Amino acid sequence: MVEIKTDAALDAMRVAGRVVGDALAAVRAAAAPGMRLLDLDEVARTVLREAGATSPFLNYRPSFAPTPFPAVICISVNDAIVHGIPDAYRLRDGDLVSIDCGAIVDGWAGDAALSFTIGTPHPEDRRLMDTTRQALEAGIAAAVVGARIGDIAHAIGSIGRAAGYGIPEDFGGHGIGRRMHEDPPVPNDGRPGRGFRLRHGLVIAIEPMFLAGGGNDYYAATDGWTLRTSDGSRAAHFEHTVAITDEGPRVLTLP
Image 1 (cartoon, rainbow, N blue to C red):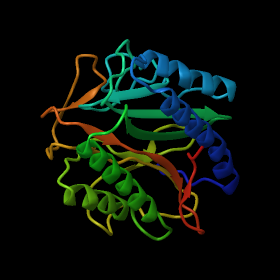
Image 2: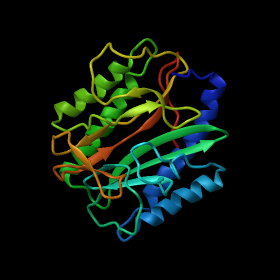
Image 3: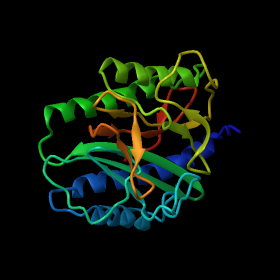
Image 4: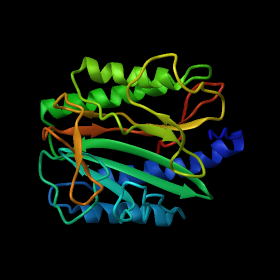
């Protein structure tokens, strides 16, 4: 069931979204060679705690997961696409890092992600990240009243396919509100003019994830959470929580 939010709810979700944006900015600023992934998780925990927010990630256990998620951010490095569990791995110069973060404030959720490299990015990584970010921007631009979910999916997928990147078919964006994952699903590839019609008050998380090798295949690592590219190529992931409004798309997860 798709829930349409009131304007007051959109303002409340902006509060949660700002916490997410602040946490991602703090983690990005702290990331450096030698930093443990566990330490970056602690950075995010501090931001959430000081803002009076809780994490929708911590102890989350969907049907596919063998164990509850043990952290407040997902950290996916190099060939990891999404859902990476922070551990004792120390970042190295040249690593491509994707951070996904959520927050709940007064019962409303926000969810966003970004990718960056440690040190100077390789040209191939820069192109992958720039293209994935452009796809997010295109998806947001398509999120207007009267359009359909398929228009967002097509905007994202067209950019990824034109660049020669793979797109994992089973993972994409989603509705968001009182819960982190709500209807409708928001695929990263699809046909325009199809799917749920967008209306004022719908809130969705738009999150393209592209695979540099061009294939769509992935596998779950032994932890049961981390998804990795089957060909070992690198992946990038960008995401914002976006409200559909009569005035145009409203990004809720900016710092």
